[in-house]
Image (tube, rainbow, N blue to C red; front, side, top):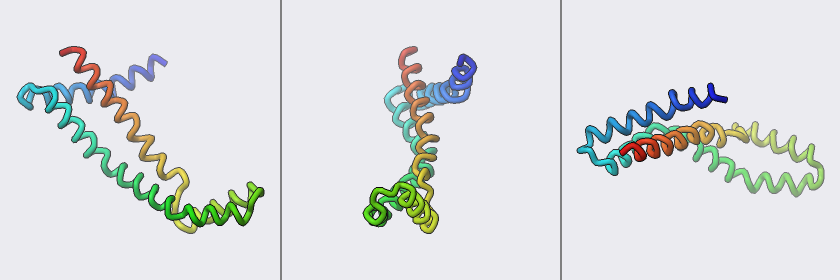
Length: 124
């Protein structure tokens, strides 16, 4: 477990903390402005993932009426519902876990951002 903590610190938190301190140094030594720019940079870096997640969520929302129709048609038959649902997803080119992939990548970045800000604030 200590190994994972070391990797998390060295790969995620330390570079983010160093970036935040660098922004603080070049942005008139104003920590508020540095945090705003740091947040903007992180959001810019994760924007493609956010767009992908939004598109997949929208596609899933469009399919909701058809999914309800499948549930009514095969009421009580879980296997048939699952089979028809997967068939619908395949026809539409949608992965049921398509929304989770981008989120799974963004979540550690935002947690790392929180730790970087917390660690930097505690030293000033």
